[in-house]
Every structure is written in structure tokens, then in C-alpha cells.
Length: 306
Image 1 (cartoon, rainbow, N blue to C red):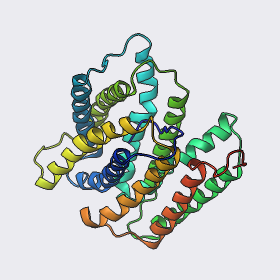
Image 2 (cartoon, helix red, strand yellow):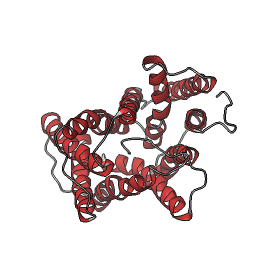
Image 3 (cartoon, rainbow, N blue to C red):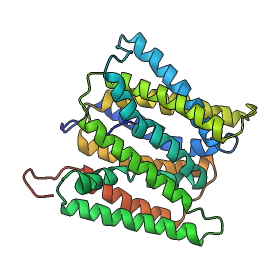
């Protein structure tokens, strides 16, 4: 997942940006069932530690070859640590616990309530204005969460704790996003992302060593493919594409991508891990998409109260 959500105010995107956006949406959508597949043979923290470490090293080599400044200096290390805790370590640690407990598509739906939490935290703690759009988004997300909770409590194999993990992860990601928006960065975002991943992976190795048994490292072919996907695609190519799009992507287009990712996750989970969504999942994703649209899509007419 990206450490931030940022888009420029432009309108029409070019063909290259569109192709990149479609690829990014597919990569991050497919990543949810791929994570679930990996957890069949590897414990959550070691999975995150392995994939994030490999992804960070791959990104470091890529950006270094392109001539970017790759070493933070002075107070820039403070930004790496303070922004990395919620954006990288918090989100990726807690969300994988949610994926372990829930169906991957369901976890994706809950994880992508992040934009609504971002706005709500701004209203509750940062003095942002409570608009009708924000109120609608809050109600829509509450309905979605209630639907999913009701199914987890009534299903024989229901695991409502997974919903708690995913919403906590979404809140941490939202806090990190707000911190990123208010940060005065002198470090290239690509470099910041790499070092947040490096420090996050170091912490994950420590957490895994303390909390989980050492893996056997004898996996099936499908497992090795899923690990490679997490390292090279989720933490690699997708991050590169996002870094290239984030500065110039129109807000409406970016919002559509965010709404599409959990849909891709649900649809591909049937093929990858054999998960069939319930009617609650379909209704919940409609409410979450409506909430995301309410808080991210710009008003049609300038000056109109949202």
C-alpha cells in the first residue's frame, strides 16, 4: 500500500497514466488474495518481514540506479521514523493479522475505509469542517462494518476479531496519511518510502522472532510465487508506478482507483484462494465505495458546498 494518498488537481489523464493506474489497481487488488495464499504456509510476521525486506532492497537498487539521493541526512531521519511507524510498520503489521482472520476480499473492503477515517480524524481532532459528505460517508461505513460484523458473528467459522484488526490498520494508515500531508519533507518521497520499508522490515523481523516459530522454508511452488509477488510486485513495481502517478493524478481518478482495489480483491480471491463472497460483502463494498466517493471526489461545481 502507498504511504500516502496525494493527487494533483488536473482533469484528464494521458494514456500512459491510465495504463499505469489500471496496472496499479490490478496489482494491489490481486495482492489481497495473494497474501491469504501465503499465510497458508508462512506465519504473518515472517511473511511481512520477508516480502518487505526484499521489496525495499529491490527499490533501493532501482532508485539508486536512477540517480536519486538515497541517504537521509540530519532531521530527515526523524521524518523516516515518525512517518514510517503508522504508514509502514503500523498498517502492514496490523493489516496482515486481519487478513489472517478474514476472507481476503473482506479484509480489503475494511482496509480501504482508510480515506473515511482520514476525514473523520480531521473533523474530530484537527478542526476540519463536518460537511454533509463527511456525515454521509461516516454513516455508509458504519453500515458496511455492521453488515460484515453481523456475518462474522453468525457464521460458524466467523472471526469478528479480524474486523477489529483491519479497522485498526485503516486508522493507523489514516493517521499516517494526515501526518504525511502536514510534513515538510526535503527528502524525495521515493527515498522516504524505501527507508520506511527498511526500518519497518527490521522491526518486523524482531516481532516475528519474538512471537512466531522459525519457518521451515520449504514451500510449495504456489507459495514461492506468492512471496515473489509480494516482494517484486506489491512492494516493488506497484510502488514505482505509484510514485510516478501520485504527484499528477487527478483526485477523482485516484479516488476511482482506490474504490476499485477491493473490488479486484474480491473477484480474484475466488480464483486464487477459492473464497466466495456473501451478499453482505457485495452490499458492504457498495457502501464503502459510496463513502470513498463522498470524501474523495471533488464537487462538480466550484464553490458549491459539499
